[in-house]
Image 1 (tube, rainbow, N blue to C red):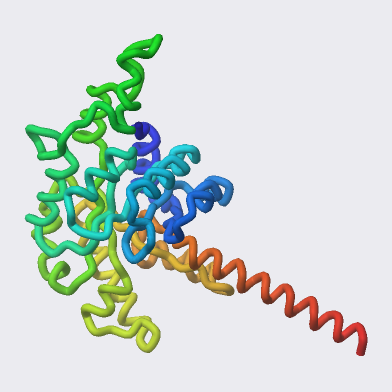
Image 2 (cartoon, rainbow, N blue to C red; image 1 turned 180 degrees about the vertical axis):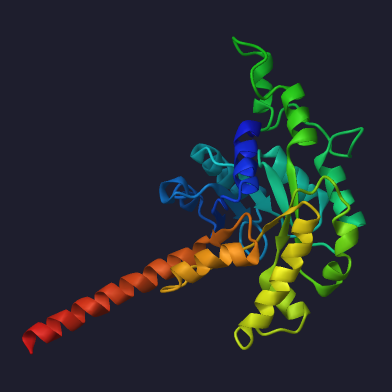
Length: 283
């Protein structure tokens, strides 16, 4: 089951403004997850939204790979559906990132799907992955991690819900959303916010950045933290690093497909440079 100490360590680093970088896995390949700690990343997001990672069996394999890294990991569900929340948490995720929300009532319903009664509506299963398939009842050493009490405690006290703000309507309701004490971190969907506000970040990057900064400031003023995606771009390492401070991105992450595309582009440059050197040598 999830390790509450690992999660708390990650949150402590976020509070200390260390901005620990994560990897969002968009490709349906568990092996990619194993690279995260090797690349110095601090957490993992398994993304079910706009990806092929929809099957529960595949999600289980992705979470097993994430467990092996000893990094906290979350699942970005693709719909505001309590069943998706239950499946992600029952398989061992540390929490969920939701699709766009616009009202406090939506978020409160999601919390009910995370918490066990009487605080919520989540059902308990004693033979699932979170409980070690009930093996602790019959193990040589009883009372190990994964027993019913540990599972209930993690679900009710530690499992995170990270709601996404993706629309102008959500921004209009920001005061209402920030009134939810349980939500420590809010995810900002940069692309969808730009679309909702009718902004073109390529044509007017300054205006897009100002929108992000204004929303992040309001979230920080409410004592909450912000998470959003950072896309690696060749030649912009310093600018992107500075942007973490400017934009107030407390829990940044990069998507694996962008990282792989960046790596392939760099490999192409190496090949082209090599060919140019050969031509120059012949000339």
